[in-house]
Image (cartoon, rainbow, N blue to C red; front, side, top):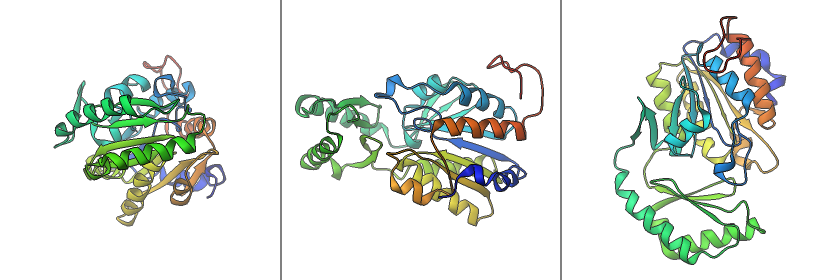
Length: 279
C-alpha cells in the first residue's frame, strides 16, 4: 500500500476539484486508540487543523462508531458534520437525528446488555451501551484473542446473530441493527448532499472499509479522491488491502492535516474556535 507522503503531488491534484470534502474516522485516526472509549482524546494538532479546514472546504465531517452526541462533545468543533453509530445517528441543528426504523432496537439492546453483564464473565471485558448498538470491548482482557472467541461463541449461542448484525472492530464486537446503513452509505449520502467533486477519506478499522468501497464507486461516477488507511501493528488486513494510500498512525495524520491546511487555507485572522492564527 503506497505511503501518502510519497504521493503528495497526486493528492494535491485532488484539491483542485471543488466542492471538496474531508471525511475522517475518529478513534485510531485523529485520536490514539485508548484502553476504553472514555479515555480517548483528540490530537490537539488534528483538532486545530480540522477547525481551519472547516472554514475553507465544502465539508469536513467526523464519522464514528460513537454516539453522535458523544462524538460532537469529543471533537468539540462547531464547524463539522458529525455522524455517529456508523451512520445510524447524525448531529443536526443541535440535536441527534436518528435513522428510520431503529427505535425498535433499543429495548433489545437493553436486554442484551443486561444478559451480558450477568453471564459473560471474562476478565477485562467492558460493555458499552450505544443506544441502539451493544458493544463488547475486550482490549483490556489478558488474552484478547481467547476473549474474542468466547464473546462470538456466546453471541451465537444466544442466537443474537439472527436479529443483529455482528460486526467487529479493533478489540470490539458490536451488535448492530440489521439495517443497510454503514460508513459507506454515509459517504455516498454526503457526497450527493454536498455535491462533492473531490473527497479525501481517512480511517483505520474494518468499519471504514465500507467507506473505502463507496469512494471507489463514487470515483467510477466521476468523483476524484483517495481512501487513506491509517495503519499500525494491529490494523486489519482489509484496511490495508482496500485503501489507496496509507498514513502510519495518528502522528502522520497530524502531519498530513497540517500539509492540507497549508494548501487550502489562506492566511487570515485569528481562528475563533482554536485561538491560533491561520497557517
